[in-house]
Image 1: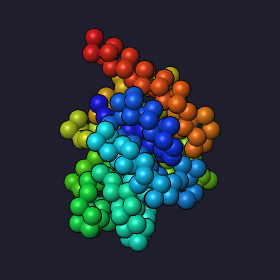
Image 2 (image 1 turned 90 degrees about the horizontal axis):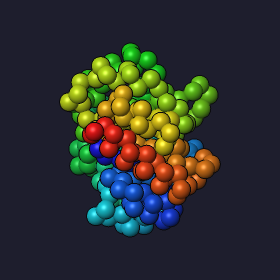
Image 3 (image 1 turned 90 degrees about the vertical axis):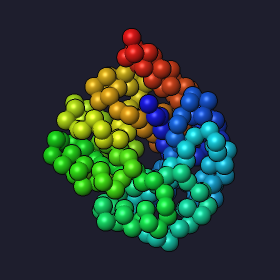
Image 4 (image 1 turned 120 degrees about the horizontal axis):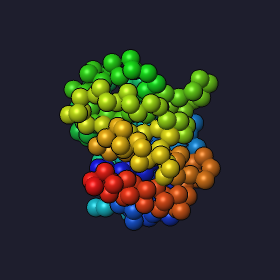
Length: 217
């Protein structure tokens, strides 16, 4: 099962993610987010993770100029699109950059999953996140979970990661119910918005290991 620690901004947090066994590390390029990072700094951290975890550049309806700058500075292994990007837009981005794409879909109720079919053909991976509360400008990282039972109706062959409100206390239940191929966490390992806590990262990996062991048993 893949594990992505997202919203990284410091060497200390990156080192904790890598030590725990993260398969993916995420860098967020969205000025309104407390986890926003400049491309040059993300590129420096990305080089520290090279060969240890895949680097994911997370954007929200970014224009071509912004994406060009991110791809040049970071050389990510994957682009994660967390905005209103259409399947046609994603097809164009894949042709432009030649990178795998992950598309985040916000979920609150069963009908929100109706969009899966439209994106499944172009996205290399989907990410199911909780639909943000009204009034917020952040499409993710709000520390909210959704009803994981909704995902039992998703085609098991659909490659997806689970996100939204995950933490050390609930990850075992989330894995047992949703049975995702990957999990993505950001606010659940923070002591304050945008501030990753090494102890929480370590506790999360311990909880994941215990959950996987119990599931195997």
